[in-house]
Length: 447
Ligand code: PA5
Image 1 (cartoon, rainbow, N blue to C red):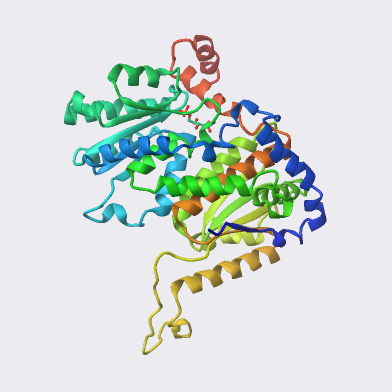
Image 2: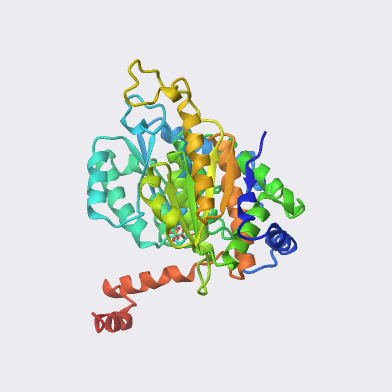
């Protein structure tokens, strides 16, 4: 099998190649620290050897649960926020036919999402849709106490129980949470739901290859074996024993670190396959939560081209020169479509008649890359042979490993997220949650 390729040569005009390669020893040491658990946040490194430690028994058990549920439903609602849903959504949206939800006679249940916002209309519109659908729920929360998914679960659990009865609902709900603690675990035990464990040493944003991602993806009909296989292969390729030049995770981490040190502050993940939109959302969480702390870190942003070339393209070309552009390029589309010839050629497109649509897309990609580099935006190119579970497994593990290395090069703990607590504290104080009386008084004096 081929591996994803990384090209950092369009960075050398901004930071010399030698500066990037001078970081090779530190990047390799960082990769070693991840493997040997000697760096910051070393109690959250379960993801490093996770792919190769997933057993056939684990997969079979998940496939069995999925097969049982799939038979009875047209939809599965994944309830979770942040790392508890973005990995699933990234894979599912990338690999599902774009208009799948509008097509009758689907082979696999459609995956819907809740608990990632607190929109009253969103939840009402979802329950209204579910009135007419057979559905299951996969509720995911590592802490088991996160407010957004807890609210969604309370509402959807009631909805499902009312719709099919408490006994039948029990068999349509899977809970994925901590092995020992949390409100979700207590509920799951009391109600008798099938449960899966999120390992203690794997943080939410690194958890796509645990049951967090594997269970809902298996119910949605995705090939979780291929996803894991891709990640296993990338675990080998990005091992610290691989020389710097052949280690895509080290190259990516070193290039973006040197660009950051040279003053670049924002990294845009760009795609020319808009199905990758949610992959970018997952990537933003991974890098934003891992690096944005202690007043440091690259701000991760994303664009879908060529749509955003007609909006954000202006800024990227000529705005503040703080940007890095990382482009994901997919070599081969899954299907074929040729531009037809038109007798009168009124739109002037006959010069590309007979060409595949993708060949035009590729020229847009190349032209954009060169224009942005000329405009002062260094480019990192990541090339995937095609979009399938295997290559997404490679890509996601690659980004995880590179993120750990980048975090260590930046000098932060890439595995905590202390900043996420601030809004929660204020929200609880404003809601007058028991235990927050003092904070309530303080915050109310400010408004
Ligand atoms: O990466 C993380 O750890 C977080 O983004 C969590 O995934 C997110 O806050 C959800 O937390 P939980 O799964 O505990 O409900």
